[in-house]
Image (cartoon, rainbow, N blue to C red; front, side, top):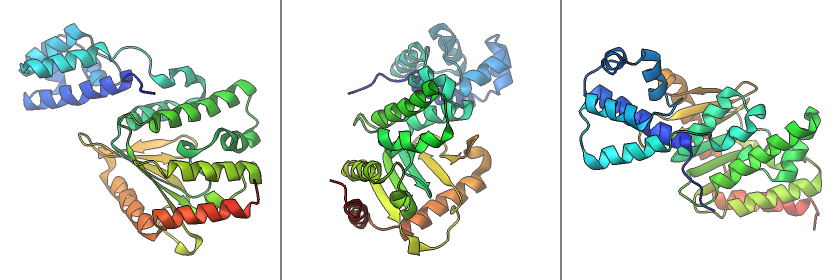
Amino acid sequence: MAHQIDPSLNRRRLRLALRHARERAGLSQREAAEQVEWSQSKLIRVETGTVGVSVSDLRALLALYGVADADEVQELEQAARGSKGPSWWSGYHEVLSPQFAQYLGYEGAAATLHTYHPIVVPGHLQTREYAEALLAPRDLKEDTFHKVVSLRMERQQRMFDGSGRPACVFVLDEASVRRKIGGPEVLAGQLGHLLELSGLDEVSIRVLPFEAGAHYSTLGSFVLLGFPDDDDLLYLEHAAGSMTGGEDLELLARYQECFRTITDMALGEAESAELISSIQQDLGVR
């Protein structure tokens, strides 16, 4: 099922286009804000994609920046009209941290997604039963529990719905495909789900075997998002979550190198599928 363009993606389109246009015009944020009689904070919010922009405000900025190409103006006006309103994850706001909500906006716009998880199957790939078993020890309130699981399922559906979603490489530590979350039946279903997803053209699932040894990220999971028109982004998955991009290029580069290293150390796609299938068969579940 195809989805409408999320408002966050339209805000991102405007953010990049308006920032680049302002820079080409040789104006600082303060100078541009003064000339259109805005507060500087309003312009900053537009350029960071945290708020939408009205068509009239957009036209004022485009005129100031000298953007006159009719096709470009029309495309940006369409984005402005679609930049208002809630994002798809707004219904889950009670269970989302601000950092993760911001991350979801970036994830939806990414061209590539590379991730490594050393402990469990990542949320992108979980079955409902596996997610429920994984969350059970947290003793969450029933409503919170169901919302967290539903968020993961909707996120997964949107990622793999076939409508121009990112090219994904998942490197899973061998421990994550052997740990019996929920018992043999739940794990068997989860491993079958991994095998199904690995058959999608845009998905590569690789297993990092136990004998691979140590590497830079043995203690934690991370996600690398790639964009054709913006800086790459690193998301470190922990209790609070954190993102970094152009503001910490050294850290970003370290994790990019780490991912290249563990990908080289991991089994190939066919070998990974064979291992996953072998573990599934050993569970003895029919």
